[in-house]
Length: 170
Length: 160
Image (tube, rainbow over all chains, first blue to last red; front, top):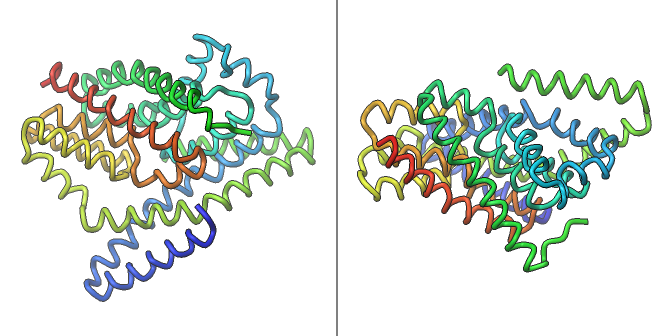
């Protein structure tokens, strides 16, 4: 997204919110308070994660990530990607900059897709919550079905994007 | 939340360790962090604000009622579409899904809602495009949607 585009979107949101206020005070406040809740959630994890991404970029050698999550990392690479993704915290968009820095360090698209998939759907804090509210049968069945699905999705994604050759990360 | 505390402690501890080893490198790391924060801040704000609008006019409780009333495959498709579009924090979504299940909603519909909620993100797609491009974002979400439905169908059959 371009800078000017994002400012237009924000202006639209401000005007929209004012409009909602005029229409109904309660709804206007509700929009602001829901947004505030989500912003707080974001701020509770994004800054330290970005610091970790920064440290990762300057300290971890490319060779290490290429060996751990590169094209030739095999089963170990898949396990490693799952491990990193499930030990996560926070919404998926927080994982976007991490995945990108992994790609820069020569992790393969297949492995980064596994990492993102694990982060999105089977991270440990989320599973604990799921067991508590939906029961262990529901949670473990979803987990058992999701793990092979993540591998399949990542493989399909990798094949599609590899063939088109339009996807290149510097 | 205990988990975010862990991330803060880990981040700060490693940052201190890094500074004690190499000041230059640590400053470079902070610069990387600040740059990505700056490039993410406004798009994230816009996305979350849009979610604020969406959830005000379509509250999680309303969504739940819609899903609970529709039975069979229509309930599943509806739940999958809702789950794909909205972004709801886990500590709201799971208790909601749990109470629906206890009220007798079908397992397939609840599973469809949960799987698409976590795997597919229409509202966050602009952010995803910013990092990985249109093609990746489209295909990741499209393929994930299909798999989320398959998982939900299987769960509905096994547990239902």
